[in-house]
Length: 340
Image 1 (cartoon, rainbow, N blue to C red):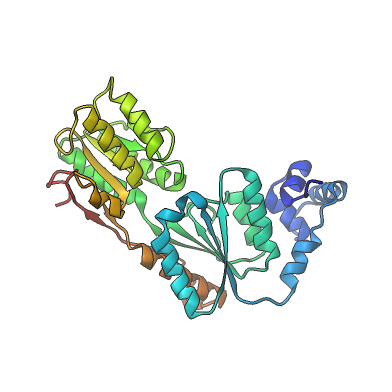
Image 2 (cartoon, rainbow, N blue to C red; image 1 turned 90 degrees about the vertical axis):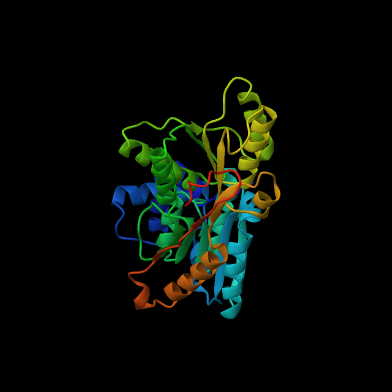
């Protein structure tokens, strides 16, 4: 028999997840007709909201839930190390939730977080929709979003430790355009759509300020295999862009290898930058330029911020959004004048 979830109730009543949550919590901001519709859906489907309420009413230990996409684990080990080291200092219990594609998995995460009586949540990037995060708001669960700038609804229960990827892209492309380079490609990373949105926005703004239009956003699969296959076929009929921006090492290496096999070499024919640094970028030849982002510090700062939110530290009321700085790492795939 299928387990009935809050998602099913929202669909049956034709309302948002947050509205269902407000009805369950007996909030007075819900219209009476809407409340009746939700309650009818709950009764029709046999949903048991008291199981969630019971979990929140019981005494609880300090438990932190960390939510991350399973495909991003390998790219966020330093952030996780920072999170875990600070968690050990405070003797927190850590509950990991790894997400994958598909709404059923996210339903399980939402239900588990609420029922497990967690005290706080560390959320990587854009795993939850804004509607799903609002459900957690209803239960007053403090959250820290780590990685990209959170562009959703601002709330006193939501903190953000982030890199300004929009500014990173804007500054880089502005410098390129000033150097006479406007043939620029941004490779989509479907595992990091919130970052991609901000990178694209920064590039578009730099082009707009220069009186130009950006048309170099390339969307295809994810990972090395699909990236390499795409560019190997693409370079049969096209020259590579003068400047190629990737978010991860696998994409940057894929475009470099496919271009070299087609007779184009970096940095003479194309420049390449990977936003995230990794050991592999320094192992390949030519070595690929990237950015130094203090990932361990991001993790440690995120857990400390969540800790202060848990104890309602008033000193943090105006400082729940912490920007992390970055520095370029020039290597062989960019020209010397770019980062100097």
